[in-house]
Structure formats: structure tokens, C-alpha cells
Amino acid sequence: MIKEQYETLVKKRDELNKTINYLAYKLDHFESHVIPFLEEDEYYQLRKKKMLKQDN
Image (cartoon, rainbow, N blue to C red):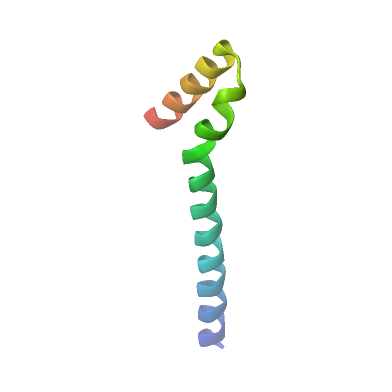
């Protein structure tokens, strides 16, 4: 029973790690895909949010 629970948790962890890595990639490349289509003010607002998140 403990082994089954362990295997279930490992599988869930692996799935979460895949999702986390995917989202991290999307966040890292967000600017290169979206920024060219934004107005200048929108760009600076996004940069400000990103910088504030990094400080936390």
C-alpha cells in the first residue's frame, strides 16, 4: 500500500514538474512573442510587473 502511494505521488510530481517547466519556458519567451505587438506603454508595464516579481 505504501509503495502504491509512493508511486502515485512520484507520478503526480513528474507531471507537475513537466507542467512547471512548460510554463517557465512560456514565461521566459513571452516577451519575444508578444512584445512586438504591444504599444510602448504596455511594454513598460509588463517589464515593471516582471521586475517586481523577481524582487519577491
